[in-house]
Length: 197
Image (cartoon, rainbow, N blue to C red):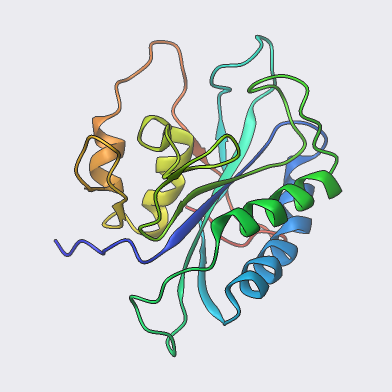
């Protein structure tokens, strides 16, 4: 098995209010354009299928989520070890997109019209009130790992503060089963989101 080093970055998409499928289709080209403008160069963008997932944490009674992941790598013309620009700037652009789609931050892990989470940005490690990289719950979330595994199961997740890098498939397989919680369900593609299982 060939494990790919973490020269990539990843963004998780989630929504469970309004019509998440419509929101995903509408934000997709905007997210791609914002990411390439921030990087200042063409990127190799890989989109996962959409998954229907159970809410994790937050208030009870939330509707199911739609989740997906975007994995970005430097374009063919860029050096594989090229560093990414400031991830805080990208975070601001992601939050601007969320706001355009009606995201309101009322309660922790509450329902939302659109959530865009920066999971990692190359080997960058940071911890501030606004941004923690790599995402502190990355290895605990089936709704992130399952979509990632459809793109590249051998992709190495960045090392946590007290751990070693592991491949996406290994991290997904290590997750404990939660009684009564359905596994993420990959959905068929459609014109707005052609990727499917």
